[in-house]
Image (cartoon, rainbow, N blue to C red; front, side):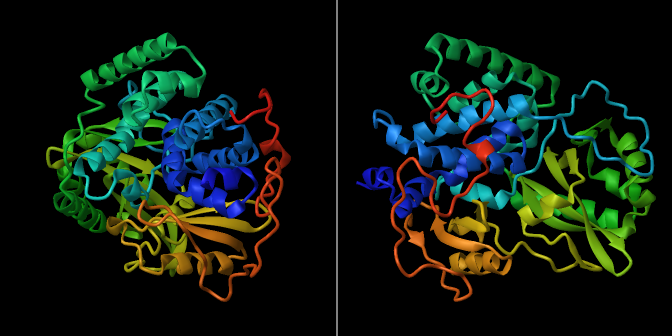
Amino acid sequence: MLLARAGAGDEDAFGVLIAPYLRELHAHCYRMLGSVHDAEDVLQEVLMRAWRYLGAFDGRGSVRGWLYRIATNRCLTARSRAATSPAPALSPVPPPPNAPDVEVTELEPYPDAWLGELAGHGDPAAGYEVRESVQLAFLTAIQLLPPRQRAVLLLRDVLGFSAAETAQILQASQAAVNSALQRARATLETHRASGRLRPASIPDPGAERALADRFTAAWHACDIPALVSVLAEDCLLTMPPAPLAYRGREAIGSFFATVPAGGDLTAIRLLPARANGQPAVAAYLRDGAIARAYGIMVLTVHAGLIGEITGFADPELFPLFGFPKQADWPPGHLTSLLPGLLIMSVGQGAVLVAVTTAANAGVAPDTAGLAASLAAQRGHQVRAVYRTTPQDRRPARPRSSSVRTSSTRPSPPKPSAAPTWWSPPSARTSLPGTTPGPR
């Protein structure tokens, strides 16, 4: 019934139909592309195509599988057109890297709060599998795979699609899917043999946070010996997309003593965060009385020590973690206000807001109303707010009077037309090198 209503042009039915899959589709696009921002852009295309071509869905498979077919093919197309991002300029000039064998890929961190609804409620095994599939080391390794091998590996080994389902999603033969999977698994084994990709362990958040706190305290004291004492002997420091890699306490200590703020680490304040199932810190640089977003460091813990530090010198990442890009100095009491929020811009100032109500995401009871209010304050018109947990898949209407909503139901558009709150650029409906259809 819901599918039929959505196919007939009912916007609310379509929103409810896709709401349960928004976060997992976003995470899939992120794994495919390695970028949160690129994943958001591609997900826009996916939802637009799903709306336009919903009438072509024959119902022989699941809606979830059909959406993954669109998402995977959109990611493959986006990756083939992607341009390499320029590496950030570091000042002062960093010391020469000492790990030339490490290949650095373009990558962005993924907020931990967004992972809560992917794990399933009360399912530690599912949570473990989700964390393992978003670890930065795993994502780095799969970004080095050919795109179709990456797609097959994710669909089969991470998402659990069968060989037949994966072949249908990729419009390939099962033999081709099995061959690609075998090659992808073999490549990952070489990364495991080298030690770069290690088996994930059940995390101890308390111990991880204590280790991150020791790292932070040494940083704030500008105590380089204490800082490197929490690092493993073979700790690796990378800063995607900069082609720089430093291995070992001495090399990393030399970098921190000279590059960030010219070595004056007291001019940088670290605040606790989490990304990719790992402890992280958000760094603010002092600029007079102002604290400016500087970068995010994600820490990989091995055997009670920090085995890898991945730095992202991109202030645009801070809002994804609920942190402002600017605050008063010192920024000692900032917290992520809406860790379970996903706002999808859908054109002409309108937004679709998806909210996770997972208990471990720390979302306030009235997050839907708060999210709508914040979006309205930014000048957006909120079409609807959707909760994305299995317990409540109904659209939650914004409560704030400042949000402009219509008291009457809009006339359903034709199934092939865009919803009234979607007005994408023409490039999103006609992409180079593609044929008409939902791919």
